[in-house]
Amino acid sequence: MNTRRIAAVIQLDPDRIDEYERYHREVWPGVLRRLTESHMSNYSIFRHGTTLFSYLEYIGDDYDADMAAIAADPETQRWWEIMNPMQQPFIERAEGEWWMALPEVFHLD
Image (cartoon, rainbow, N blue to C red; front, side, top):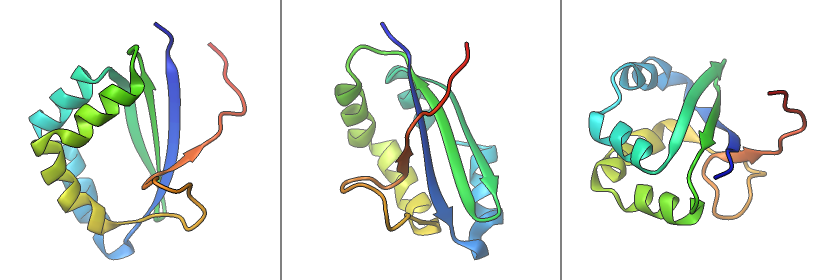
């Protein structure tokens, strides 16, 4: 099993910063459980102004299957219904992306 490091960015509606951060202080247990069961680890979201930066480590063996399990999870879908209107994707993101993936340019263990 290899660790896959994933970083991404998205814009946050400036009028909803407090609401977004309030939700993330108490992320729903079912959402956290699904992320853990899908081998997501060391997951953090940082904010600079209205830019959100996420970092996580994927420690599983089938990333596509685990991402599909997250997307199919009803609790996660309800979470996204609340979060997505607060977010504004970057125009230059790849087709199919919501959060824009960032290339890794340096890593030190």
